[in-house]
Structure formats: C-alpha cells, structure tokens
Length: 184
Image (cartoon, rainbow, N blue to C red):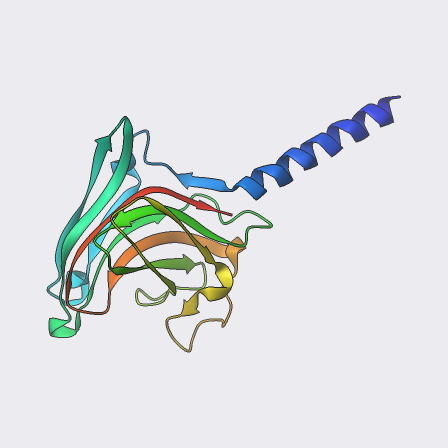
C-alpha cells in the first residue's frame, strides 16, 4: 500500500511539474523591488557614447520595466541593455525564452550569457520586434546565435547565468517596456 501511495505522489508531482513547464516558468514579473535585480548597462563601459536608463513603472496595478535611451555606434559603441543575473539556470525541458513586451515599433534583442561566456562581449543573441501594444514574444533557444567563434554553436539552457534585453547595433532612439520574462 505504501508503494502505491508513493507511486501516486510521484506521478502527481511529475504531472504537476510538466504542466508547470508547459505553461512556462516565470523568471521575473517585476514585482517585489525589481530595481534590486535588474541592472542597466551601456556601451560606455567600453568607450561608447550610448546613453539611457531603466525605470520601473506601475500601470493598472502592474509593474513593468521601461528602458529608454539613445543608441549610438560612434566610438565603436552601439548598445544599451537591462540585465538580470539569474540565480538558477534554465529548467530541464525549457525550449525558449518568453517575454511580454511593448515599445516603439522597433527591433530589440535578448542576450543570454552562460558559464561559458567569460568575456564581456560574449553572448547568445536572438532578435524580436515590438509594437505599441503588449504582446507575448517566444524565442526558441535554437534561434539564439553566438556572438563569436569562441562560443559553442548551440546554447545550453542548463548553463544560463544572465538574461538581457538589449537595444543594439544601429543608431536609434530606444523605448521598450517589459512586463514578464520567463521560459517556456
């Protein structure tokens, strides 16, 4: 009888875990002091001249991140970024990154870093477009490209260390808002 009960408990736990992953795993929904977790970076750390900021805005009872700024490719620059260092790597079975975003009808990027991206300019990148309305974006891990030849060709989700939302690679005014970040 004990074995039967244990088997049922294990089966229910496994079913719950797989259903949870099918629905996704939240990394951050910007509640509970997001300013303590998210950091803003610009290319000024390497001599560039881009500028910006990340702020946290409450609208309709929900908090979200808003990154704004000017991206300039002058002086070998070209990015602004909001980044979250992750306490845990991606869950087993995750197949991609999920965002809920809106912005100024432009292209933005997610940069993922792993324990194998040791140099500051190393990351895995996937692009996405935003509109002025909130929308869910799903980026399969298979679409993330390494930033250089020294990285593995394929991203390993179980080795993730940070996730960044980035305005990158061209001169433009950036404005992106992020309400949720997670895995699916």
